[in-house]
Length: 525
Image 1 (spheres, one colour):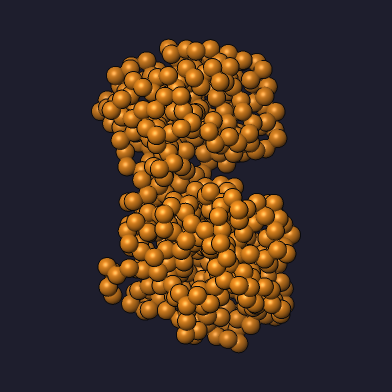
Image 2 (spheres, rainbow, N blue to C red):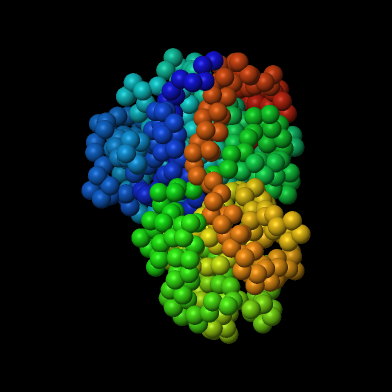
């Protein structure tokens, strides 16, 4: 097929910067489409219009009048508003007051209904506009029903029959697990249920939307090469590793990038002194300014270590909790923490700040400008995650000259190379075992290396000059789009590619099967 022609891509994400954000998915959705558009492709985003997304603030204009959307055995009205990110990437907002006119994004009892409606409305929107996508790029469980529909409900639809799907897993831990009713809402009950012999029994008794996205998508990817390998194992597979191993021939890893228009120390309006790799001396005032803001003594002789994170075990705070007193008592450094999370960690770090007021500053909130100042003002950036699909913090920190200390997992392993004093190679400090002593040893190595300023300067410059832009990642995504189209049209279709029977009768296909509904025992993903 012609891989040089311009593609039409519908990009579906439940959250997009700057409109709505709870995590890294929003950052990706607000940056990657701009980079793909810069490569000459017609990419358009669709997301729900939540109550917090003000049409006046974001200059949203009506695009389509209300039209009916099938949902369960009824119809719900959807209207479409249009906004933009960048100069020329349209963002279409699916509007329905009953389902989306709420302040929050997730954690409602009708979330399955809400996001199934959004997905169906996005497809019907394309039909209404007469804009036929070559590829639908689905992200996380909120849009995982789309690949399922494309192989069933829309398989022979003249408008969508050649439309391929790419399904991106941003975090396998959040799967969208619901009861059988979700298939009725989605209009999929006639196609049967999927049961997998190697899944845990309880997963064969629920509807796992992410699992369905994995099973039905033409191509699957996750957000780093290392994480794509890790999720094939029970340790990282979140109990879906049997399905992922079945589909490993179409599973790829593409590292996320960072938006250099947003994260650029040479233009950042939030930092005390702007700088770049050619003017590194201009970075120094940022450390002193951050120490003043945090109420810490202004000391240039010891490193200031920062962390910006959700406070949870997944992010390694159980390891930090084990060593924090020894760290404060024996490793000369300061620590600044920005984030929110589990209450036990709020209480822990408030107590640590009280015990070590000259060493620790804690901000239990989310503050984007302060985050920028932490990237620009710290000497080191700490991310000891148990698992990390990609991680953006370590890349932003390096771009701002803060040297990362990380656990070698997922995207952290793909971006941070452990410094070797014998060869001088590396751009940070990493440890392999998920162990508090291993973290402590990495901290000690980093603090000792900080004393050698010429070496430290080389580490800073190596990180600042690395290419973490979206341009390289965008080209890889375009390659996956072409691969998905070829798979959809049969050019590279594996033998186990699903063929579905409308009556739901059993049919083997590469380790999983469709079974007719014979009660609770046959309910699967």
